[in-house]
Amino acid sequence: MVRVVEISSQLTAVIRSQAAPGNLSSAVPAACGQVWEYMRAAGHPKPGRNVALYLDGTVTFEAGAEVSAPFPAGPRVFCSHLPGGTVATVTHVGDYKLAPAHQAIRNWCEANGRSSTLNWEIYRHGTDDPAKIRTEVFYLLEPATGER
Image (cartoon, rainbow, N blue to C red; front, side, top):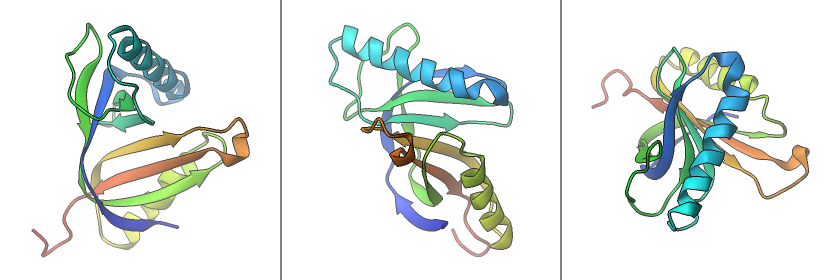
């Protein structure tokens, strides 16, 4: 079920990269792993949940993890943020085949006359049972007609 909620911006530690859609399933976890390695090696506080922010149609993305405070950048890892604002969101439970969650939000946007230019995923791990993995999918909504 698609929900519309207001969220706050969240600081992240990320690597920016590009990948073909078919390669995201390996590129995103690899980037997240590199961020965790950098944060540990640099002595920064332990990051939070893994994230992937998709910036454009050519699949330019930022992948890494939530952080609680800004930090000095490394050779590839830098401080960024997930946007705040009004979002349409779906929680997917199970494996990382997220196309149906993304499609549900796109369908909702079309049915409700809304548009979005950015989307992202937040991965909630903490279980070895693939049936219990939770991934939150977010689409930042453009203001509706008449909103400012």
